Length: 374
Image 1: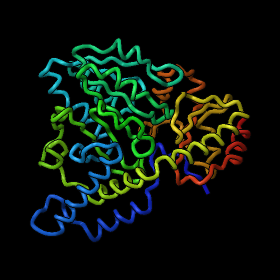
Image 2: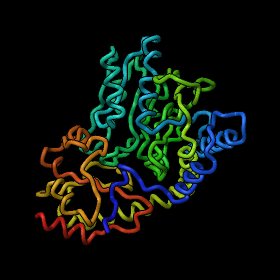
Image 3: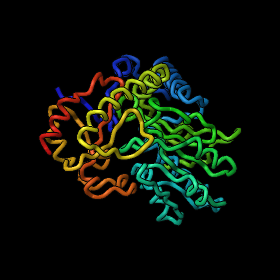
Image 4: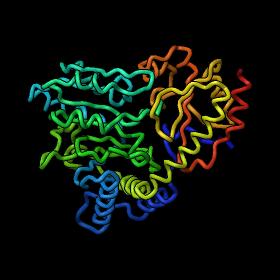
């Protein structure tokens, strides 16, 4: 049986979550906006329960949780929603990194085409930003700093606490794409200096198609977001459309489960990672990035092409060689290019990612397949 080692792309759904989603779909199926009968009232109650469950994970008020279809939509609202504010206040400078997910890079590129100026922070071979470069890049007209927490390809963890310290003395809005950390590695996401946090349900054992944007208040004021979609008053008029109550309820439960088990999950993931690295060391593996998440390992083995590796691993392990969002046609990873890896190293890069549901790694079989390519 093939072992699934691509949880950075999507995670399996927790059975308790799946059971709740099914119940909400076939029994408690009311529209949360319907106020004239108990079906709607019950659906509204389920949504607000989930809002609290999501909020509790990083200690924010439930009114600061805006439900979306996932982190991509959340990123778009967080970035494009600030456009008019930037124009009105003449704050049209944005700082981001060269290793962001395309769901951040492309909305920022859209603003760049519409008169905004963007500073792209570099990363070294370690995959981490230079904090001094961030300090130098900040300007009085900097509207937004957008830096991801954990990279989806390498697992590199950016120092959010130190970034928050740098931003403490300015009014620039700080957005964090936390798709790979929320519910699994929440350290520092509770820092009140982070204004906007994008999260995704299908990275934390909830279904596809649900996520949230955390919009932290500064005192009594929310980030000045304007809607980028129109057609209803749902979610404070920032995200119109009928709420996906079953998915929202499932996402909320997944967050509640994560809040109780994060530490245990991290330790299990780290044990798996360390056991794999011991075996890969014997093949001379090179690990791409430093300060990485327990849930992922990105590595290159000299002499092995990732495409060939994925072929021989079929039936043993489901792995990837980059972001699932850009894998329909192979192009070299912009993340690994930004880190300065050679074309050969990039072409050999393999990403394996796992979760608490991964009982064990088929290490002997994996190593055997790799040896067959050498």
